[in-house]
Length: 529
Ligand SMILES: CC(=O)SCCNC(=O)CCNC(=O)[C@H](O)C(C)(C)COP(=O)(O)OP(=O)(O)OC[C@H]1O[C@@H](n2cnc3c(N)ncnc32)[C@H](O)[C@@H]1OP(=O)(O)O
Ligand SMILES: CC(C)C(=O)C(=O)O
Image (cartoon, rainbow, N blue to C red; front, side, top):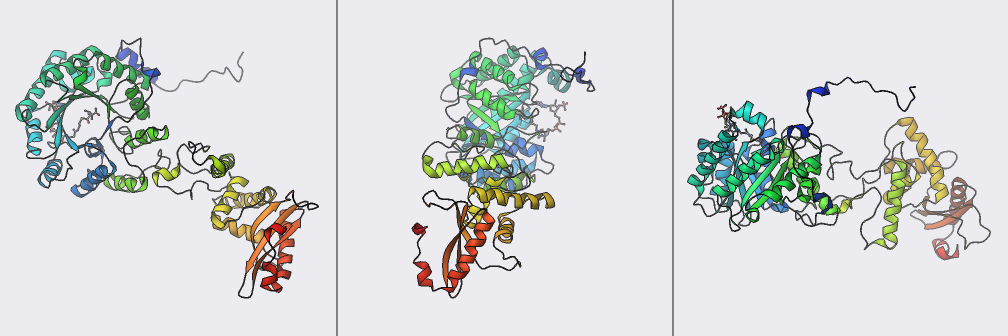
């Protein structure tokens, strides 16, 4: 029998065209340890925006944009930066020359230059770093996965290994004697390469380049096109971590892309599995759906109490530089940096955030951050609390009260908040749009602070209280109003069954009091209520 819960879904997608990655790559790891690990310190970060990010842009960066991006990366603390593919274009080559000739790289920063395993390209790459004063990594790559071997490069396993080794020898010939140069190799499409073959290739390179603890070789294992769930990548990395020769002379690096939307998860699990270094782009620009977002990775660490060692305390400035350099705007929901990521529109979330803030004010200040719905304190990354709560038709009294309180210093009592929320709901239902604090204040004034003929009554509600228990015989709502005019200033209170009637009573009383002398009204103290 067909019931609503076992109804057959209809197949319309040609999914039979694709093979599960397990059928393409067998990862022989059964005793994986990464699921039990935790990340306790930041990996080495390497932004590749100026190379991998740049090669994905409709309009690659000009020298000015590249330089601004590079300088910003240095300011916020990156110590190793891939600066280009010098043999790709004169712009890329000239940028590396600019860094070399104008000595623009601080002593404690290493630059990475990228090249395919082709002698002419390697020679030009080495020419680009001639005379540069800083440390340099020459990053050699060749794809190793079967489809690339067969379709793109037209070489079998042994022939391709020889092509790569020959590139490695060219690197040694041109740059082996340069004391400030180290080497990196990437088996492009590592994640779709047979584990035994990629291990053979990597071990060949570390032997050829004589990896040693004083001059370690970087082996960078990319998920060039993300094709599997992140646990598969983690298994692949752990297998390499445990199998590589000269492991103590290898810096194990990862380079995830984000085709399945899980680049961040891949990088995090890879670090659990033994990766020491992560290449990616700040906010995740890059080929197709992007390189892994190393800003998100860093702030994820921050959010779990681990210092990311990169300064994101002014995230909006970083964002402006990145958007300008790439010519691509960030999504308003982009993790950490998007315009809307610290904003709650919905009522129950606003209520919880407001209570979370109040709890911190009331004594939890020094304690670990635990404000509902806000994974980090927006102030850590230079954001104010202004946008944390915004009001529309999905909002409730908590959010409305929060905006009045932060915008106008008016703290409404519970019953008055409930009453006023109805007024606001009627407004948002009628208009459909968001209301800002100014509009809320106008609605509030119109509802509670105007006389029946619509004229301003010249007083302002500064505070209202719900029947304080210390005041016997008063039931209902107490409203306090204040006024200030050239002749007098003071405050008054009123009691009523509803917020509205309390406000009216307070205003009446204010009207009387305002006529009295300032001295006599000022002598009434809060406590006497
Ligand atoms: C995953 C990645 O991000 S890899 C980096 C990709 N980035 C880029 O390609 C950006 C910069 N590239 C370029 O500007 C150009 O491709 C250049 C200058 C490097 C080379 O340009 P061209 O000489 O015109 O070659 P083209 O790009 O058309 O083709 C690449 C050739 O190199 C071969 N090749 C590709 N990758 C490699 C490699 N890693 N090692 C050796 N040879 C390679 C290809 O098989 C092809 O050879 P073929 O012409 O014999 O078929
Ligand atoms: C070759 C490597 C580093 C790369 O850019 C990739 O695989 O995406």
